[in-house]
Amino acid sequence: MTNRQVEAGEVRVNLAEAGEGEPVLLLHGWPQHHQMWREVMRRLASRYRLIAPDLRGFGWTEAPGHGYDGDTFARDQVALLDALDIERAKVIGHDWGGWTAMLLGLDHSERIERMIVVDAPHPWPSRRLSDFRELWRSWYAGVLAAPVLGPRVLRRTDFVKGILTRAAPPGTFEQAELDSYANSFRPAERARAVNSLYRYYHRVFVSALRGRWRDRRLRVPTLLLFGADDLYVTAKLVDGYQPYADEMRAEIVSGAGHFLVDERPDLICERAVEFFG
Image (tube, rainbow, N blue to C red; front, side):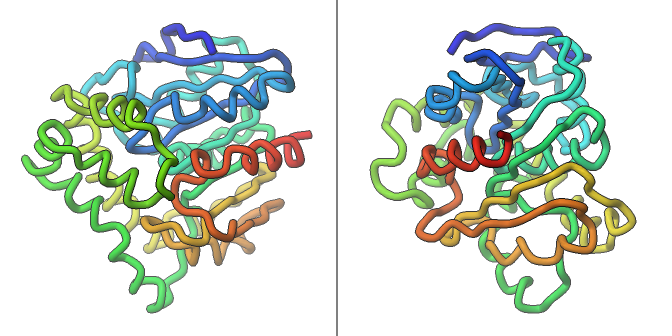
């Protein structure tokens, strides 16, 4: 991988790149940054031009103090594609990167050829009572969104390391990785970015339940991958997309958790080759 920084819209974006060929945008989630894609990039660099940016406020991309929401994240990616002179790209997104991919597919479909969304919900949640019983899994979102408490646990504790190790098989993350991810949120402006993002999380959850996207249709071919044992986002959220998508299918990966990219990079790469061609 090579790293560089690019002026993209209103933020300076840090990105890692590898390989040549058709462009594939790799979008990370919380609590990680672009380095979560290193094994995927190592395996796919012979096939594609791989571009792994840090989202605004994450990693080494600027944290401007505003715009920590899915719509802005999606616009940032369009600005990045413009800055790189890329007309259309394929996308793989995990967690917040997966949600960003969904919004890219809905609002900027002319820029996205195909996409794989990993361990992130689609915007058409069901209203079944059984699904509401799964909300306990998102306890950490309340902590991160809390005034004062959210930024404090990121800056002064190993909360991030606990989130990562609790939900993945032993040995998934090396100590250096855990330190890198945790330390990336120690600066005050980045802790505040996460705090703001998770306040948005609660707002967008309510608006999705109220049907904000039920008059929208996803026309970008999409593969949704979910770990069957995801500790933080229940795989039950996979259901319900069929009336709203032209070409979308879901796969529940047995024996895998929330950090599917880290746990099963070979599977991610196999699905990418199959789905992207």
